[in-house]
Length: 81
Image (cartoon, rainbow, N blue to C red; front, side, top):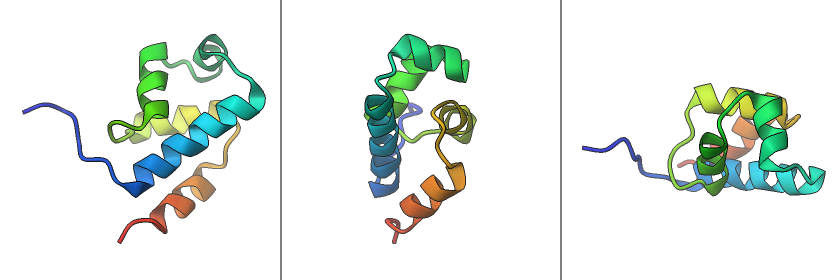
């Protein structure tokens, strides 16, 4: 059994917000690697939203991308039944 998890609207929303912030700031993957301390492959997976984003990835991404983590989670939680 693989680690891939089902993805729902909350993950899709968070991934979309991460992609939007990257685009707004015109940040490259190198910029994000430096800002977050995460590997490019980890950042890429999170931005694609194909798999659930772990809290260990989400915290440094939100901080490095200057996003309010609690607001991001609140918005996403409204999409979960």
